[in-house]
Amino acid sequence: MHPTPMSPLIWVQKAINIMDLEFIRLLNRFAEKHSILNYMMQKGRWFYPGFIAFLFILNSCSGPLEWPESPLYVFERGESNTTQPTDLESALEKIAGHYAHFDVVAYEDTTTRTTMRTFIVSYGFTDFYLEEGRLVQADRFVHAEQKLSRKNAKSVFKDEAVQAIKPRVQEVELFRKEGAWNIYRPETPSLLGIDGDPMKPLSTDPYDPNLTDPDKDGHPGVTVQISVGKFFRGEIYITRREIFSNYLTLNNNGTLSGYVIDRSEQFVVGASKKILNQESNPIQLPDTGMSPVFLVKVDPAIDTFEELMKIRDDIFPEEPEFHPKKK
Image (cartoon, rainbow, N blue to C red; front, side, top):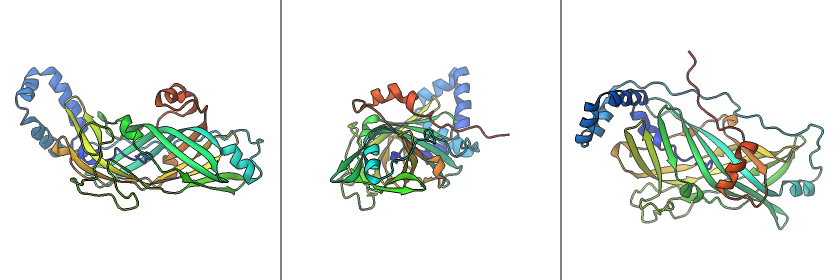
């Protein structure tokens, strides 16, 4: 996920790429006008998935939507005449607190027949506090959205699965550079959907006895629900090894902004349809302006997804969107 640490949700890319989404759109329109096609689909359920997949493979894929411009956001840093803390002790005091967390990670998969692009938008809370004179960061994620560069394609990652991502509480590095205080949070790998040693590579055994069911839906790993148009729906069951780091700058207005580096691993344990049970190799875009993180200090009483969404539009920018290709 990282979630953005959730860089999750990327495993749908190759499966969706097999299906031409523009063709799905046309098929949907045709089906609405021609009841005989609906009848055929209902009666020939054994035939329909393979038939559609075959047509999609034969049909040329339309190009993906385009990335927006980088950087995605230019965050307000506060009045220029506001001074930064002058010493380490005052910087620690200013940074400590409870923050609402918003981050975006951009991924691209070029292993597919047509390039697939994805934004993972993660929401949660970040707390900074002092522990024996050290600055410590604790992250908790509550919700994630996935934006795909394909029309009519949608995937949903349950909040229960997002909330099961538990990054390790980590001491961070605080240093001053070019007159501003900066925070570096190093990588602390954690596992999702499987038990084991997070410092070791993620298991690629679909029958690993250490598989868990954190979203409690009866399937191994965590479940991603996928829909394309009106007629195709399915699920993918995945495990994750979350590996991310943050680079943040203390702004004059007290917010923290920066970027995410994500090197997470994922494995598709299984799927509800064979066409979805495929691996892909998405990588994060190297442009850090496409993977921002933004933290805003809030009342400690605000600590649930519902409470965060009530103030979301007041403190966070709009979620990024892909754009049609310019003619």
